[in-house]
Picture 1 (tube, rainbow, N blue to C red):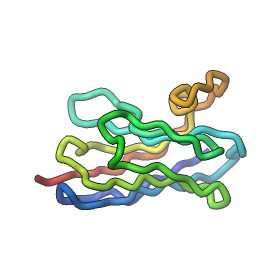
Picture 2: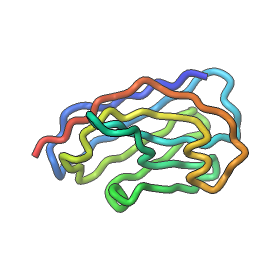
Picture 3: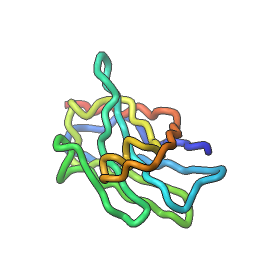
Picture 4: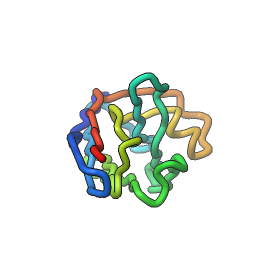
Length: 124
């Protein structure tokens, strides 16, 4: 399984940005996907998760501002970032894996695939 993230860049606070992730390879029709981020000096954190049925989960810091979605037919996942803040600056990673599954209450999903990161910088 290969994941390719794109869409990062420089955005002003209060603007908007959309990240995309496309998957290829042997992707099961049942999977759990998520966007993670890692800021300098901080641990990687799960920002948003989505199940194949569309159920979602967000970290409190982005609720109401970010929207995760997916297009199963195209093996794509998106993160719409509205009203970003400087503290959202980080490298963002897309993932198919157990972390997203557990965030959605599923504990029998022993996979972990990562895309390369895409840098998001929010200017004040």
